[in-house]
Length: 429
Image (cartoon, rainbow, N blue to C red; front, side, top):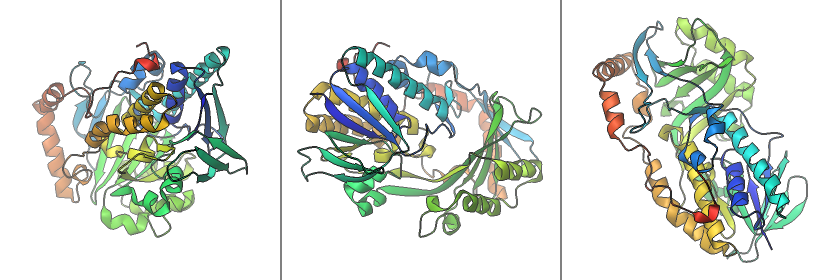
């Protein structure tokens, strides 16, 4: 009998896990993916390419949708450039602030989703069950024995009840799956705030202002505005605040994400009321008219174990490293790769697969969750003098090419482990 698996969340790692499992053995897994949104969530910020994509044979598909960003320019309160970090395209060492394979989150989701559908069709041709996606559906309740024997009983938002051998929560840093399986108190406590808040939305492209170089603008009070265009018809606008004193404004007793979009927009208008004239109208007009506004509180998710019985957590739901790390998508895809590898290796022994998942992945997660001293506040000065100092330091570093030297000498991939080999996944790079 195939292992009946429910995956909660159709973001990055849910479709990736489905693709990897179906390619490993089309007949060994029956997969269902539920997503509370009515369609794929294709919004979100720019992210980096990942080695797992290459292992999955999807590098060409990613190349077709990469955004071409040549660096990041830091500007003063008049919009004048002070210094610029470029792309490390030497093929050696770590990427800089801009990766060789920058891709929009929505584009990567589509690539992985399409790959899972293709793998599903191949599986069905070979007698397998493939994967079934159900949009507009969420999980209302999870029930299992304390030791996990006997699988998991699931009640869906539409009233249906089903039994699964394994439930995988791939539903983000605020994971409902985590709260349902670990208990509400422990599930919420696993999220450790970094007192960093960000809003993302798109604005009309301005060919006079926008180019293939991102623009970073600091304001006092640990605030930052970023514009990233990269040849797209619309420009991404980021508002970032790293000031703990603003927490009462951005997050109340009911939780920041429970505020309506209009309430959140008003908060950001108040927080950025003193935005400098050169970009003020653009930010506020864009904030008013945008239909893809998204905001969140950045933090990390930390748990002693990523499984409880026959419920496992994947990606941000179990070990979110935060956007500050620059490794959120990497961690999600590496996690999907390791979990798929362990399930393919141990087949019917789910407990052994989950033990292996935790043991193999833990060193990697420990490292990507290790943030530089002072992060994230160090990159957003509190005062105008601090901004002047940051700009002066940036000019010194880039003038003498210290950034290029440092990146070329650092390991190419951040992480506590090289990707383990799983012949059971039958991947051809």
